[in-house]
Amino acid sequence: MSAHKSVKDLPEDGEKFDIKKVSKLLGMLFSVGILTTIACAVIFLNQEWRATMAYSWLFAFIFFFTLALGGLFWTLLHNATNSGWGVAVRRLMENLGLMLPWLFVFALPFVVIPDVRGALWEWMGERREMISEAEDYAASHLETETAEWEEKVREARARFSEVRSGIESGMAKATPGEKAFLQEKLDAETAAFDALKSEDAAPTVESIKAHHMKESNVLLYNKGGFLNMGFWFFRFIAYFVILTLLIRFLRGLSVRQDADGDEKRTMLARRMSCGFLPLFAVVTTFAVIDWLMCLDYTWFSTMWGVYLFAGSALSSMAVLVLVLTYLRNLGYLRDVVTEEHYHIMGKLMHAFVIFWAYISFSQYFLIWYANITEETRFFLMRNTGHWNTVSILLVVCHFFIPFLALLQKRVKTTPRLLCAVSLWMIAMHIIDMYWIVIPERGPSLGAGVVVPGAIFFDVLAFTAVGALLAYIFLRSLGKDSLYPCRDPRLEESINLMN
Image 1 (cartoon, rainbow, N blue to C red):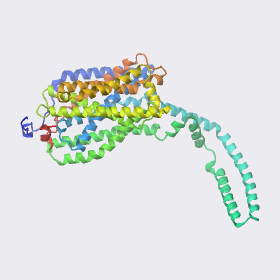
Image 2 (cartoon, rainbow, N blue to C red):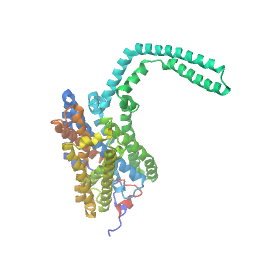
Image 3 (cartoon, one colour):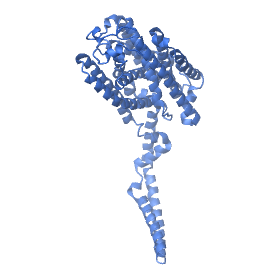
Image 4 (cartoon, one colour):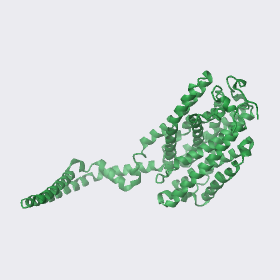
């Protein structure tokens, strides 16, 4: 058993990452990121390539977005559960979550380029066309429908007068019980006639337009309260604002505690994180519904948010393992992080490998068993042709192989082996995100199953977003201590045993 460590033996202000040690790497990442981003911008400017590039950019964006989401999730979970083991690595979780504000910059093509939005989310174009057609129809048919309504009112008035006369004459000879029955019938006829001739029943441009929209596309019409451009833009901005506020608030508490050592900041972070977790779940769910599920607005799954969350948590933990090992190889965190931390991180990865498989199978099983056309389309597309090979690959390589590997304690406690598994899981997450986004491109663009040459755009977009985010992430490591140096549970963390 190793000797007990004391925080007094650690540097008072923690460890600062010297970015000069990685200046060449930073220079390379920046150069590659800028050049590939310029190349992507040139492609976006080309009308012929824009729609194809839109899917490539969404694939790259959503992959790195899920990694940053995972960083925020682990930060929230660590604080909410008052975790002791994770204090030593919590600052890395925060740094990963801090990529969320930067990801808004990479999401700007979706906001500022209408053709990109239209290529990805077809409901936008269909809704615009549906509204335009309905307005034209309403304008041209208002007089006709008004005349038909007036004729219907005249006929109803004549019929009502006849019915009323018959009822009133019948009341003279009726018994008290029959009179009550006839009076109820007269009241009902009167109410029906009044409703028909009222101004509210008269056809208007809006009522004709609404009826035409419902007739032309009832599903899109019924989802109009959610799938409309004004609300979509509001949600888009709100997602980033809320997530940015969450991570910056928690990061602010953590960094300020480095300066004053106030234990109240730990308790405040704990209380706030307990409240933030449900908000995080709602925002995350609606974000992936907006950006991924609505690639086909006719398809839906109640497990979609959980499915994306499972992959996000798993892949982000894999990234944290790699970053932690990289820093230790540079000489940092060696007195703070031990094999015990790797052991717990490996166990968490193992848990989320199982959780991802459980959610994936549950979603597939429920949709396939129900056999509803609108739901099975998603899997029919991905179980056909070469996409079926990718589906089988995900089943085997995203679950069975890492599941068996992480069963072994030696893998979880050996940094080199755990890094190998982490690289594997990140590769599988890339394939998973590709499997979600890219199959929608061919049918949407009318190019069959696969768009020829589009793989080049996919690699280019992934490199552009990845290189620049890696550059920003590495630079962010040098701003503050690599671990919360005055957290009250730091000593517990550096003496971790499990």
